[in-house]
Image 1: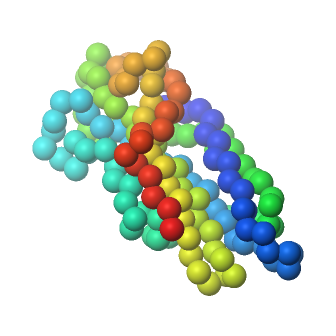
Image 2: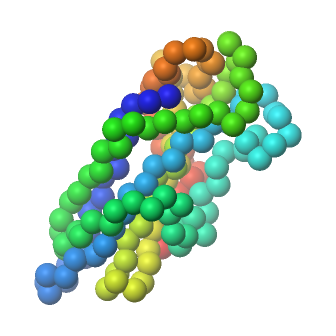
Length: 147
């Protein structure tokens, strides 16, 4: 699966000292089979309080974001490989977890993470084919953390 992913974030502090916070945005895609396989992939990816204090698994660039400034990151190729076997016509779910990690005064780490589900043609779940799938990511109300 390929396509663009965009993560938007804003520094909402009101400090007038002109200092910037270091911030990084990540997005990860997770497939989940509709039929239970007895593996870790049978459940949606967890988004817990611990998710928001962990450093991202991906080492990406941190951007300087000044008070009141908005930024967005475009991920031009969002790719997912299913770690389980799919046959043509098998249904599966796609989840995305987007996190913004930032540092306050360069030492105190904060994060906000949200989980999304892919809707393909207005339906939750996708059908395995030999072509690219697409759809819209909608927020999964039970997958959110911030600190």
